[in-house]
Image (tube, rainbow, N blue to C red; front, side, top):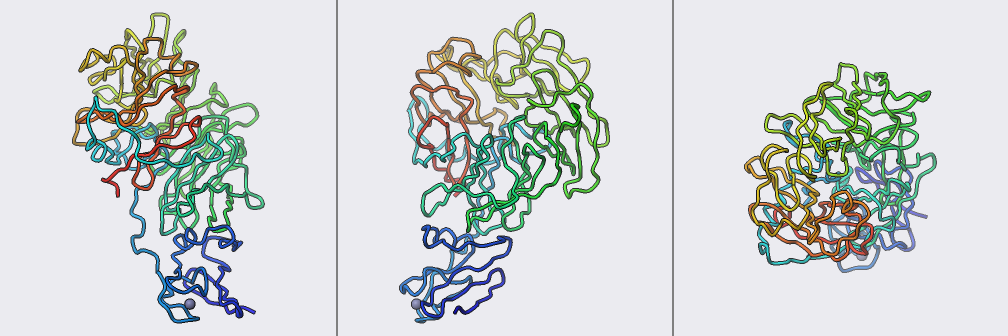
Length: 493
Ligand SMILES: [Zn+2]
């Protein structure tokens, strides 16, 4: 026999004999499989639910939300800390939803004040080290999100997008848990194009994001108590691209009868529209970029852009010109136009995006970066993307800088951000990004002061480095490493 206790969000059962509580149901969680005690999950579940924990008695491992005293022995209980998570969300380096309109959305640019903390460290040439580490998730090729998903505390998720594995970080136990798909959940794998998800901005409990899958666009929900997830179909079709958002619209590309089409709807799912995209490929798209009231998907063979209310426009690249998408992404000229680097018969050039008659600006060598965080070898390019580089230290000639994340700050004219610097590397940029193992790489913060955050021996496939921000730390993950490196951010704690 059990007594039933109801709180505003949950139903708890108290065992008549043992006086121990277990969760029967809770808002938004669906079916609850309460084995938290057996799995060592009690401290984590208590924070997620806002439930009370024993302080001095051991009558029950957990008590319902709001309980101040143990109903069995009358001793005081520990209520969850009142600091409902004020931590900023993280939806991937390219997932900042709060950038101003004049900054392209969908590129690795963040509004978080990372420089305020990182620039307190010893400036270069001092070589720093990470402050702490976190285990790598079991499926290491993944994207990270840190958000509350409607719970009172922030939690970290790692989605392995090619293998359909959703992993949950339990901060109390310091363990990754693989979440189990509930019956009927769509597989979360998406390999047709680059992965991007659209976060729920005012999430209900457990609501994560709109995710692209092989079978369509799905709303993803998690139940971190039972360690399960479920999905809800928003649009069912073989998707060709990840979704993007522009003004009040969401949109993605899909394939039907061997033809690519564009699907769009309002954010609440109303006003669905489907449009033809003649000539556009059915896979291999970059995540969309939202800028100038348009969504743009980039491809090895061309670009597709769409403005709500108009027809989508597919433009193949000029004859003989191929983009270098791996160099970073579009960058802006002083007048606000977007440009993409590529290679044609006369060498490298920047090509204007979004117009059938693009202007081209030749350059003498590769430039790595995106969104005005741009480098020619070891030197920043601070004017026009095709302008001369700014040589601060001629020794940087034999280094190559790969930008990872730009930090957007309205009060600064010089771009700042997180970069990798490959030392004593004078080979082709293409090789450094693909097959080469680089003997020495430093992780650096470029800002008012340049700070060397870490030193890495033998780095291969640098484009697989994933920065993320969680728990007032900047983290850097690479699938080859056995630990994720972290640097504390005082400005976020
Ligand atoms: Zn007690």
